[in-house]
Amino acid sequence: MTAPRSIRPERATHHSLGDDAPAPTTRGSSTRKAVLVPTMVGLVIGTLFVTIFLAAFHTPEPHGLPVGIVGSTSQVEAVEQKLVTNSPGRVAFTHYASVDAAQDAVEHRQVYGAYIVSGDGASTRLLYAGANGPAVTNTLQGIFGTVAQSSQATLGSQDVAPTSSGDTRGLSIFYSGFGLVLAGYLFGLVSSQMAPRLPLRRRLLSLTAFSTASGITVALTAGGTGFNALPGNLAAIMAVMILMAMAVGSATLLIMRVAGPAGTLLASLILLILGNATSGGTLPPAYLPDWLRPLSEILPVGLGVRALQGVSYFGGDGYLRGIVLLTVWALGSVAVLWVLDRAAARRHGGPSTVAAPL
Image (cartoon, rainbow, N blue to C red; front, top):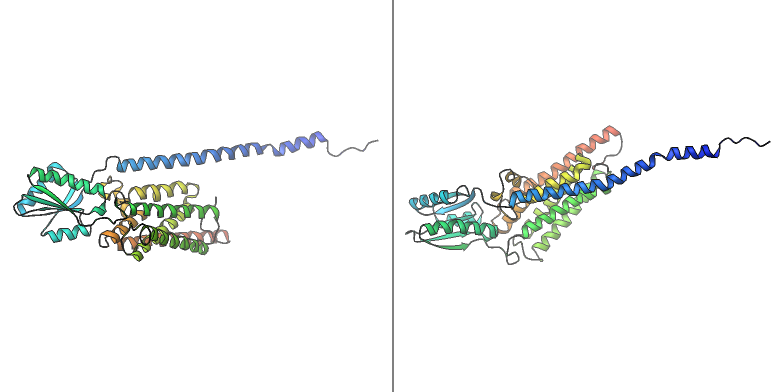
């Protein structure tokens, strides 16, 4: 007699298939997620980028652009009346007692231009800063050309703060800032994804090394021995660029930690899209819609761009404020990461981390 078998082949086969049955569903779900998530993230980021930049720059017009006026009381009043009539709300005017005072204000970017009326009113002169970019120059020449023509006066012009020979269009600071912000964002993103449980001290060492190396490299490339596009003090330029990279890198790490999977989208929106749209690198904040203008005063790229413009062309305008607030961004983000790190360590009783798991 043949001994009975403990397991029949057909039942063994049945159980094997039953145990593996959920696998195709799991694989299918993972495949759909791998296809849909990158598609949606790319679509949303691209749509936001186009929408916000078009909202900011599709028909750029200044709103309260600061300008100065020099002349007698009656001449100034006449010019102001023409500005109110011909260019309502486009400029905000300040009366200066002398040409020297007005020129100093333009050179330190207290105003973007100054309109000088001669004693007899037969001739006028526009003082402007080419370093503000051709769009601002064209705006001022258009506005005050109309004023001079209505007074039957000739209009001369003088560039009192021209761009360097290596930056004839005044865009190098914007592109330098954009490059640093993009690099800082990518550092935070890749660092979070590749090493989600890296200890904080090592993360900070990596952040410091990246920020220092990238800031010095970009400063030397744009100014220094590179393209001679930033004519300011090299050490001051390096300090701003290092802090820009560190501020954006640390802020990206924090956003990724707090927001988890949505961190990529949020960091892109806040630091890249809104940051660069409001930076003032292509057009001053006075050209932005009211809802975007305040961001130019608080986001890292706007702070850095103004500081770089100030140290390169405008007697340090915005430099100290930029250094202070970029430091606040960097140290504040690191401090919050440290608090979150310590709280997670206490909850789990294990080693601390500073980035959200994938």
